[in-house]
Amino acid sequence: MPTPTKGARLGGSASHQRHMLANLATQLFDHKAITTTEVRAKRLQPVAEKLISKAKRGDLHARRTVMKTITDKAVVAALFEELAPKFAGRDGGYTRITKLPNRKGDNAPMALIELVLEPVKPSKKAAAAAGAKKTAAKAEAKEAAAVAEAVEAEAVAEAVEADALQAVEDATVAEEAAEAAALQAVEDATVAEEAAEAAEAAEDEAK
Image (cartoon, rainbow, N blue to C red; front, side):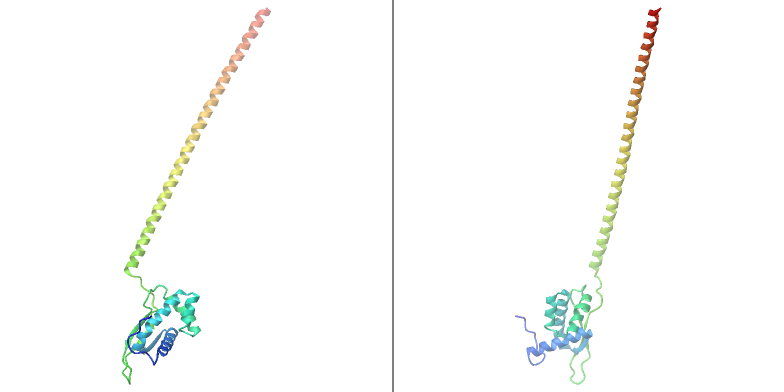
């Protein structure tokens, strides 16, 4: 069971108090700030913040749960579509209570309860973490660039080595072809010389 709230109820019964807080929450989400008694503002604050937390979820179940408290569909739509996105970066403390001068007449303490719609300033730890992430990202980018350059240089060296090997192979093939041509020329000269000697011998025999 929920822990009972300390102090007297707002109104004559628990249902009256629930309706009163629901109406105050509706006016708060509609006008972004309302002036009421300090006791009502303190009772309204946790109710409003729980509704905002459900609105940040944004699903159908959360919308139906909020509509059990706030029956105005226009206010619910504004809460889910306009106000909830503004609290996306805030983990709590969606409302602020500011004390005002006492009310004239019954001297009741008054307060202003309003939605905290200012953008969240990043803490020093968050800024340091973001800076560390940027530094790490830069270091990784430099390392990746160095690796890419090394790979490119290795590819160029391999290409040069391949060209040199191809040139050596071409020179070897050309040298072998030249040797083969020289041997063929020697053989042709030998054959021609033998043919000439044979012709000369034939002429001598004929004489």
